[in-house]
Image (cartoon, rainbow, N blue to C red):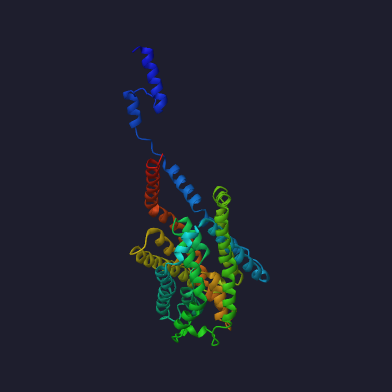
Length: 413
């Protein structure tokens, strides 16, 4: 074989296999490759960490700004009703429209059939949290001069209200949990709330303790109107947008995915949640609720809110790990400790009719403070939950790739 023929064969082989010859590296080049990269200066690593936190936790930064704005500038009292109506219906509808466009219909229906986990979540959300809140109030009530009586009732009330909806759905998606399960548990909890919350509050405040003297003797008023309002809100701002989103996802899958994923319009859910939280704090500041309470009582409510969240989430996560997977555990971790002022505020207005406006505002303070902390803590926990579930997600992707390769190799010609 001639040299030219050998060269031509080598060229054809390299074209066929896509492999090209490379010259061996010299000892100096190999030594250069083995030299470890020079570590970045401390200030550069610090700046990189700050940049990562601001980008990853932009929601938490924006939340702080919205609460600061609410504390300085409020919507006039005469416009509070219109603001609450628009924000409550429109923003929740946006969140569940986006959710409906992204959640597979089959997965959503499967989660509605899981009655065991429904009992597991709702029992903790109503019974466990309210019992712990009542125990703390009973300890605080030993000293009659320690806490404002309306605040103690407010702590009990906060433990009895159902889980929130909007923030649960948004945070679970950011933490890579089971968003379909969160949707089901949140809607179920808010459907049960108008019935269970008044009964639980009545049970805990019928002890005759000194702090219950602040409550009116008339009892809850016009619960029928409350039920009508709650279920109308659930239907128009939750179920209807969810059904519309499911319709768009199944009938127009291509354009829906393009708009939500490529155009990043799914971020509208996070912005809508910010508006919901802003309107809650705006209402609290405009009523003067915070200025009517002693500063040491406010500090105590802040610290007890942190303790409540920590205890509730530790208990629910520990119990979930005994029989649930990671995705379900994340969903439970966001549903159980969360409490909703969106239903708690109208419930308080109906249940405590006859009380002075300032005492009703005081009862709502623990719930409003707790909401701010639960959102902040939930946002930070998305980092930990994503890291926790990442190995499982990577194994799932590897399994899908291996399955696809096996199918391709054994497909009929």
